[in-house]
Amino acid sequence: MTIEEIVEQIKENLNLVNAGVINPEDFDENKKDDLEDVMNFTNSRNNLSPNEREAVLQQLRELKK
Image (cartoon, rainbow, N blue to C red; front, side, top):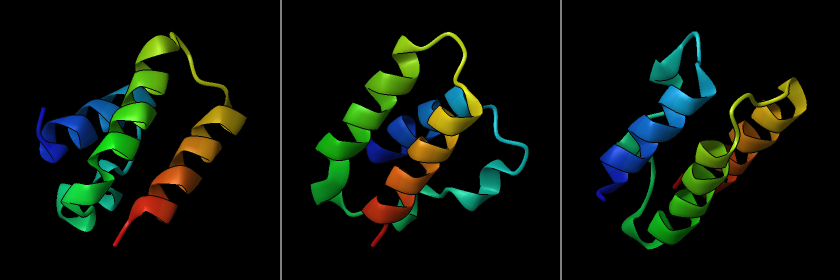
C-alpha cells in the first residue's frame, strides 16, 4: 500500500468530520511502517472510543514531518 492509501484508510476508520486535517503529503516515506501499525489498529476495532480516537490522532500528529 502507498502512504496515500494507508492515510485514506485511517481517515475512513476514524470517521472524521474534517478529514482534510490529515494529508498523505504530511508524512515521510520512512514513517510508512508506523502508519501501517496505526492503520492495522484502527482496522482491528469496530468502534473506536473517543479516547482511542484521540490517541490515534495524537500518534498521527507525532508522525508528521
